Length: 245
Image (cartoon, rainbow, N blue to C red; front, side, top):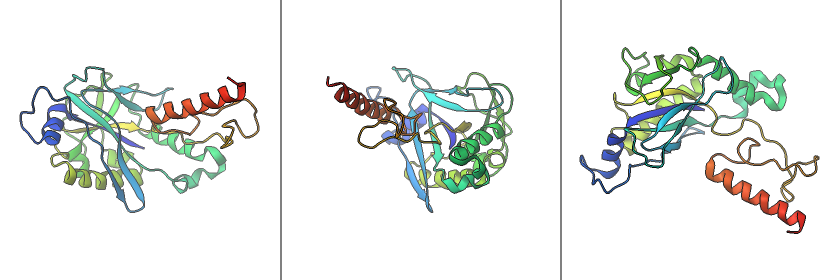
């Protein structure tokens, strides 16, 4: 779990193409960043060049955002999730929920990040690094609206502290990543499922419900569009095999 980071696309182009005026023939630049902070991973996810940040909550009283790009990738902003790996011990206080403990942790953090209906908490990345709320915010592609929040106070420490350390590492790989022209928007919490539905490794069916094939992100067997597609293909092939097609 973590945040969406929104930069000017022109800045990402400049950093990645090492030029103040990249050729107009070059596509909008992307990036993929990852670092290990102690025993946790901090990494970018679902980077959207020329894209927008969109609301993704499924009920009232919570805040969840995601990102997307149109096929032209022609928007002025680039955005990417930057997330921290979550472990079972992070949900130790929810152990009474059994297999759903991490889902309860996710739900509570989504509630903590709620400002008001559809409005997303936001903060300049430089202010996040200095642990203070932003006095002014940048124009964002998140259309329902944003509100200044110090995310170091609303995110759990294991997420906020590791994201800050991750940003320091990212800025060494992409000089200029930490800039007052970049903004964090929260919460990015749906990168992968907090539970996994059991399935047999050979038949790909549920371990005791015949003809039920847990598949993709929601069932806990993928962490993105491509891996979901691959898992879907594997399941479809297995079903065809079972039917003798």
